Length: 111
DNA sequence: AATGTGACATACC
DNA sequence: TGGTATGCCACAT
Image (cartoon, rainbow, N blue to C red; front, side, top):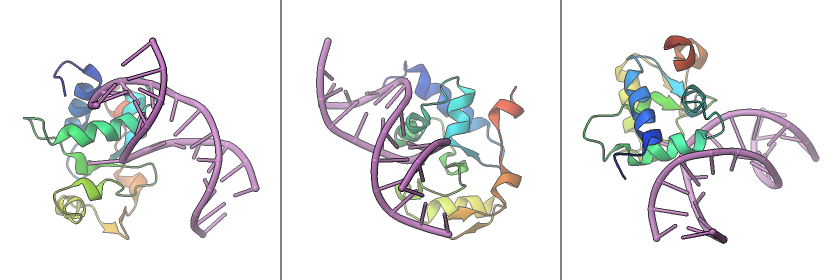
């Protein structure tokens, strides 16, 4: 992972801007960065987020259905849900309840 | 330079 | 309502 790859870096920065108790989707982040079709890359970026010196709240990023698809990549599979619930987000059956209500759209929120 | 790949998204049976 | 197929793009090898 090079510190130069701006894409990964941008992803990390956007994720860090997600407020507590809110969630967003890989696609939304990709769209905000201008590459709407590279949602998969956002997930890939999260793959390397653990190596970042600054913390990246990857648990606040779910898929378009509000499903915690990335939970398996955390320290423990339950970590993601626990972190979310800790922030006031209810997770049921591995998906965020009232997802649209907690949804935080960088395109809208950040402009 | 080419090929493989993935924590997605959407369209279509 | 849910699985399958396909597009997609940046990164690793």
